[in-house]
Image (tube, rainbow, N blue to C red; front, side, top):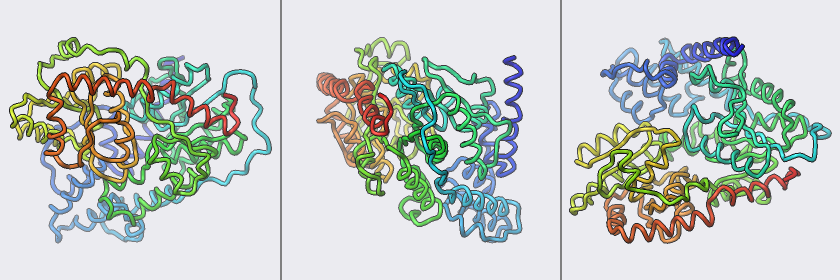
Length: 536
């Protein structure tokens, strides 16, 4: 019977793959390689147009810009390549009206029109139900978290946060469950996941249509599948998490059934897009404008909004949301992160020799500033300190960071992405946690999770002097100018003293224990749900 169930998912997987390949062969290939790593092609030097296609497929703006510059202006493929790059740069209206003669250009036009159609869809004006759906009372509150993806297939800060929130709510006796976006995880290569899939006691429900709908038709399919699940589970509240696609579907379903809808703004995707597609100069392009408009729509439409920090709350209120409806539910750590660590045992297990290990656990994007960290470690080594780098995680910036460490003769351990259950051991091998994020709109607002985990393990942390980072570092932690390796090295230098490291690490650990554990954060969720009538 289970085999038959898996077989029914094959059309979904195939339709999703075919659609991606039809819309953009390079993007389809990139998605296939992510799902099946063994299919990755051996690296070779592509021509300019092929390099552009691969960069666009991986959403690498700077690489795409460099590839476009390498294509001669009189080359026959140049016009189509310019249109393809313009889509990546967010100039959708400009491309949608073009009349190209080559296949690459025609694909770009179709992509621009498709994105305009999707991002122009506002929040549904579904009539509100006259009365709430009939749900049994007297039992524990039922919360259904509506998210994009989840553990174990997708390991990221957001999926870890979802899992820990649901787990902490279940520890309170609440019936907290999670549902992921249509097609997931089948369209990410996992045809065999159970539905629901139970992980550490948390049920993850899947919305699996027979075939994957096109992007422009996803919204009604999403709302229909979610509505069917809601009619079975009868939750007291739908709590959608970034992005706005999840919030819009939850809002339509909740409004039609009289169920309150909460929205958790974990990021501002428009600012994330901006930081990686040209920076401040791209504020006026279609993609940024539409992403910002759609995000504002769902913030205003939600019955209650939760978010990660003070800066994010202020930004949400500035968009017109009633301050009484916005609650801060910060990132936090499980209680077991406060256990005393054993540095020697962790290093022996991982094969990490004795030295001053400075590093991070993160998704390695360019804006994380890991190059600044490597340069600062190089300066410490010039001062006679045996400082070395330990950077755990994967991402588009990792290759460049490894190359920089090699060029600067900085010993670097970079195991890539490691399983969630092994992260604590890698933390424990560190002496100092570095958080040298660059100054961008997204990093000024969005608070990270990993420095909280590091401090819970008693590891002193040095970070960029940005508002969102000051919110997650213990009082007295060192803050430095972004993009300044020398200033970072000067802040790290005193921490070569093991006694000072121990003192600052213990102070950080106590601060986490007092303010940033999941049981303490649950009180903010309790207040948010109570505001909309959930029996908590």
